[in-house]
Image 1 (cartoon, rainbow, N blue to C red):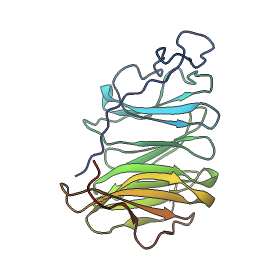
Image 2: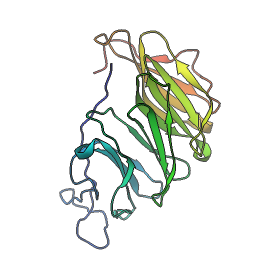
Image 3: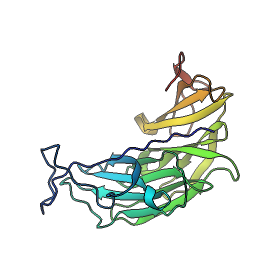
Image 4: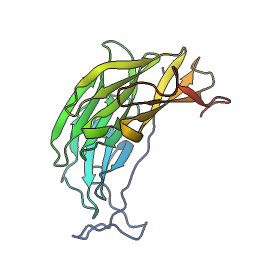
Length: 243
Protein backbone atom coordinates (compact mmCIF):
# COMPACT_ATOMS: atom_id res chain seq x y z
CA UNK A 1 0.00 0.00 0.00
CA UNK A 2 1.33 3.41 -0.91
CA UNK A 3 1.03 6.60 1.08
CA UNK A 4 1.91 10.05 -0.17
CA UNK A 5 2.27 11.84 3.13
CA UNK A 6 3.59 15.33 3.68
CA UNK A 7 3.69 17.13 6.99
CA UNK A 8 4.33 20.68 5.91
CA UNK A 9 3.10 23.82 7.54
CA UNK A 10 2.21 27.05 5.82
CA UNK A 11 2.34 30.64 6.93
CA UNK A 12 0.77 33.25 4.67
CA UNK A 13 2.91 36.38 4.73
CA UNK A 14 0.62 39.19 5.85
CA UNK A 15 1.16 42.27 7.97
CA UNK A 16 -0.30 41.34 11.35
CA UNK A 17 -2.25 43.75 13.49
CA UNK A 18 -3.16 46.38 10.90
CA UNK A 19 -6.78 47.00 9.99
CA UNK A 20 -5.86 47.28 6.31
CA UNK A 21 -4.48 43.76 6.30
CA UNK A 22 -2.09 44.62 3.47
CA UNK A 23 0.62 42.14 2.54
CA UNK A 24 3.90 42.89 4.24
CA UNK A 25 7.11 43.73 2.40
CA UNK A 26 9.01 42.20 5.32
CA UNK A 27 9.24 38.41 5.05
CA UNK A 28 9.94 38.21 8.79
CA UNK A 29 6.54 39.74 9.60
CA UNK A 30 3.90 37.08 9.08
CA UNK A 31 0.32 36.37 10.04
CA UNK A 32 -0.97 32.90 10.70
CA UNK A 33 -3.95 31.96 8.59
CA UNK A 34 -6.93 32.38 10.94
CA UNK A 35 -7.86 28.95 12.24
CA UNK A 36 -4.48 27.48 11.34
CA UNK A 37 -2.72 28.38 14.56
CA UNK A 38 -2.43 24.81 15.85
CA UNK A 39 -1.69 21.38 14.37
CA UNK A 40 -1.95 22.09 10.62
CA UNK A 41 -0.78 19.26 8.36
CA UNK A 42 -0.50 18.78 4.60
CA UNK A 43 -1.36 22.32 3.51
CA UNK A 44 -2.25 23.55 0.03
CA UNK A 45 -2.99 26.94 -1.53
CA UNK A 46 -4.45 28.03 -4.87
CA UNK A 47 -4.89 31.51 -6.41
CA UNK A 48 -8.49 32.73 -6.51
CA UNK A 49 -8.09 34.67 -9.78
CA UNK A 50 -8.54 38.05 -8.06
CA UNK A 51 -5.15 38.45 -6.41
CA UNK A 52 -6.04 36.43 -3.34
CA UNK A 53 -5.85 32.74 -2.55
CA UNK A 54 -7.64 29.81 -0.99
CA UNK A 55 -5.71 27.94 1.70
CA UNK A 56 -6.61 24.47 2.95
CA UNK A 57 -5.13 22.03 5.45
CA UNK A 58 -5.79 19.07 7.69
CA UNK A 59 -6.38 19.96 11.34
CA UNK A 60 -4.34 17.22 13.01
CA UNK A 61 -5.67 18.09 16.47
CA UNK A 62 -9.12 16.61 15.86
CA UNK A 63 -8.96 13.61 13.53
CA UNK A 64 -7.52 15.36 10.48
CA UNK A 65 -10.49 17.55 9.64
CA UNK A 66 -10.38 19.30 6.25
CA UNK A 67 -10.35 23.09 6.77
CA UNK A 68 -10.44 25.96 4.25
CA UNK A 69 -9.76 29.68 4.46
CA UNK A 70 -9.96 32.45 1.82
CA UNK A 71 -7.43 35.31 1.80
CA UNK A 72 -8.25 38.31 -0.41
CA UNK A 73 -5.83 40.42 -2.46
CA UNK A 74 -5.19 42.71 0.52
CA UNK A 75 -4.22 39.80 2.74
CA UNK A 76 -7.46 39.79 4.74
CA UNK A 77 -9.06 36.50 5.76
CA UNK A 78 -12.63 36.36 4.50
CA UNK A 79 -13.95 34.08 7.22
CA UNK A 80 -13.60 34.66 10.98
CA UNK A 81 -13.26 30.89 11.37
CA UNK A 82 -12.07 28.47 8.68
CA UNK A 83 -14.71 26.49 6.86
CA UNK A 84 -15.03 22.91 8.12
CA UNK A 85 -15.20 21.07 4.81
CA UNK A 86 -15.15 17.60 6.37
CA UNK A 87 -15.17 16.41 9.99
CA UNK A 88 -13.04 13.27 10.05
CA UNK A 89 -11.90 10.78 12.69
CA UNK A 90 -8.72 9.40 11.17
CA UNK A 91 -5.38 8.51 12.76
CA UNK A 92 -3.43 8.89 9.50
CA UNK A 93 -3.97 10.62 6.18
CA UNK A 94 -2.74 10.79 2.63
CA UNK A 95 -2.17 13.96 0.66
CA UNK A 96 -5.18 15.84 -0.70
CA UNK A 97 -5.66 18.41 -3.45
CA UNK A 98 -7.01 21.95 -3.84
CA UNK A 99 -7.76 23.91 -6.99
CA UNK A 100 -10.02 26.74 -8.16
CA UNK A 101 -12.58 26.10 -10.89
CA UNK A 102 -13.57 28.37 -13.78
CA UNK A 103 -16.23 30.02 -11.57
CA UNK A 104 -13.76 31.00 -8.85
CA UNK A 105 -14.91 28.29 -6.45
CA UNK A 106 -12.51 26.26 -4.34
CA UNK A 107 -12.55 22.54 -5.18
CA UNK A 108 -10.97 20.03 -2.81
CA UNK A 109 -10.52 16.26 -3.09
CA UNK A 110 -9.24 13.87 -0.44
CA UNK A 111 -9.36 10.21 0.62
CA UNK A 112 -12.09 9.98 3.26
CA UNK A 113 -13.04 7.16 5.61
CA UNK A 114 -14.24 4.81 2.86
CA UNK A 115 -14.48 6.84 -0.36
CA UNK A 116 -12.75 9.54 -2.35
CA UNK A 117 -14.49 12.75 -1.34
CA UNK A 118 -14.62 16.05 -3.21
CA UNK A 119 -16.28 19.33 -2.31
CA UNK A 120 -16.82 22.67 -4.02
CA UNK A 121 -16.98 25.82 -1.88
CA UNK A 122 -18.45 29.10 -3.16
CA UNK A 123 -16.59 32.41 -2.61
CA UNK A 124 -19.08 33.30 0.15
CA UNK A 125 -18.16 30.13 2.05
CA UNK A 126 -21.28 28.11 1.30
CA UNK A 127 -20.95 24.57 -0.02
CA UNK A 128 -21.91 24.17 -3.68
CA UNK A 129 -21.58 20.37 -3.52
CA UNK A 130 -19.90 17.60 -1.55
CA UNK A 131 -19.93 14.09 -3.02
CA UNK A 132 -18.22 10.70 -2.77
CA UNK A 133 -16.61 8.69 -5.58
CA UNK A 134 -14.91 5.33 -6.08
CA UNK A 135 -15.78 1.65 -5.82
CA UNK A 136 -17.20 0.24 -2.61
CA UNK A 137 -14.71 -1.80 -0.60
CA UNK A 138 -11.69 -0.91 -2.75
CA UNK A 139 -8.48 0.72 -1.54
CA UNK A 140 -8.81 4.35 -2.67
CA UNK A 141 -6.26 7.13 -2.43
CA UNK A 142 -4.21 9.92 -3.96
CA UNK A 143 -7.03 12.22 -5.08
CA UNK A 144 -6.14 14.85 -7.71
CA UNK A 145 -8.22 17.55 -9.44
CA UNK A 146 -7.93 19.94 -12.38
CA UNK A 147 -10.34 22.68 -13.49
CA UNK A 148 -12.17 22.31 -16.80
CA UNK A 149 -14.33 24.89 -18.64
CA UNK A 150 -17.65 26.14 -17.18
CA UNK A 151 -16.98 24.98 -13.64
CA UNK A 152 -16.51 21.31 -14.50
CA UNK A 153 -13.50 19.45 -13.12
CA UNK A 154 -11.42 16.33 -13.75
CA UNK A 155 -11.02 14.12 -10.69
CA UNK A 156 -8.45 11.32 -10.48
CA UNK A 157 -7.69 8.78 -7.78
CA UNK A 158 -5.91 5.47 -7.21
CA UNK A 159 -8.22 2.45 -6.96
CA UNK A 160 -6.35 -0.69 -5.93
CA UNK A 161 -3.52 -0.90 -8.52
CA UNK A 162 -5.14 1.29 -11.19
CA UNK A 163 -5.70 5.00 -11.79
CA UNK A 164 -9.25 6.22 -12.32
CA UNK A 165 -10.22 9.56 -13.87
CA UNK A 166 -13.77 10.92 -13.76
CA UNK A 167 -15.21 14.07 -15.30
CA UNK A 168 -17.38 15.97 -12.79
CA UNK A 169 -20.14 18.43 -13.72
CA UNK A 170 -20.56 21.95 -12.36
CA UNK A 171 -22.98 20.47 -9.82
CA UNK A 172 -20.63 17.72 -8.66
CA UNK A 173 -22.21 14.76 -10.48
CA UNK A 174 -20.16 12.15 -12.33
CA UNK A 175 -20.45 12.65 -16.07
CA UNK A 176 -20.15 9.52 -18.17
CA UNK A 177 -18.12 6.46 -17.31
CA UNK A 178 -14.78 6.87 -15.54
CA UNK A 179 -11.56 6.14 -17.40
CA UNK A 180 -9.63 3.33 -15.70
CA UNK A 181 -5.93 3.00 -16.57
CA UNK A 182 -4.18 -0.27 -15.78
CA UNK A 183 -0.83 -1.02 -17.43
CA UNK A 184 0.34 -3.74 -15.06
CA UNK A 185 1.94 -3.19 -11.70
CA UNK A 186 0.64 -0.19 -9.77
CA UNK A 187 -0.22 3.14 -11.40
CA UNK A 188 -0.85 6.06 -9.04
CA UNK A 189 -2.06 9.52 -10.20
CA UNK A 190 0.49 12.15 -9.28
CA UNK A 191 -0.97 15.39 -10.66
CA UNK A 192 -3.60 16.87 -12.98
CA UNK A 193 -3.09 20.15 -14.82
CA UNK A 194 -5.44 21.98 -17.23
CA UNK A 195 -4.26 22.41 -20.80
CA UNK A 196 -5.63 23.87 -24.05
CA UNK A 197 -9.23 23.72 -25.32
CA UNK A 198 -10.61 22.06 -22.19
CA UNK A 199 -8.02 19.28 -22.18
CA UNK A 200 -5.84 18.31 -19.22
CA UNK A 201 -2.58 16.47 -18.58
CA UNK A 202 -2.31 13.70 -16.00
CA UNK A 203 0.95 12.42 -14.58
CA UNK A 204 1.38 9.07 -12.84
CA UNK A 205 3.90 7.16 -10.76
CA UNK A 206 4.28 3.56 -11.94
CA UNK A 207 5.96 0.63 -10.21
CA UNK A 208 5.91 -3.14 -10.47
CA UNK A 209 6.69 -3.94 -6.84
CA UNK A 210 6.42 -1.67 -3.80
CA UNK A 211 10.20 -1.69 -3.24
CA UNK A 212 10.99 -1.53 -6.97
CA UNK A 213 11.91 1.55 -9.03
CA UNK A 214 9.27 4.26 -9.38
CA UNK A 215 8.84 5.71 -12.88
CA UNK A 216 7.01 8.83 -14.09
CA UNK A 217 4.45 8.65 -16.90
CA UNK A 218 1.95 11.10 -18.41
CA UNK A 219 -1.12 11.22 -20.63
CA UNK A 220 -3.10 14.08 -22.16
CA UNK A 221 -6.91 13.86 -22.30
CA UNK A 222 -9.25 15.94 -24.40
CA UNK A 223 -12.49 17.41 -23.08
CA UNK A 224 -14.27 14.14 -23.93
CA UNK A 225 -11.79 12.07 -21.86
CA UNK A 226 -10.03 10.59 -24.89
CA UNK A 227 -6.31 9.89 -24.48
CA UNK A 228 -4.27 11.96 -26.95
CA UNK A 229 -0.78 10.51 -26.48
CA UNK A 230 -1.45 6.93 -27.50
CA UNK A 231 -3.21 4.01 -25.85
CA UNK A 232 -1.11 4.13 -22.66
CA UNK A 233 0.65 6.91 -20.73
CA UNK A 234 4.01 7.86 -22.20
CA UNK A 235 7.33 7.61 -20.35
CA UNK A 236 8.63 10.83 -18.83
CA UNK A 237 11.22 9.42 -16.43
CA UNK A 238 12.03 5.80 -17.25
CA UNK A 239 15.43 5.07 -15.68
CA UNK A 240 16.50 5.08 -12.05
CA UNK A 241 13.77 5.71 -9.52
CA UNK A 242 11.77 8.66 -8.25
CA UNK A 243 12.34 9.44 -4.60
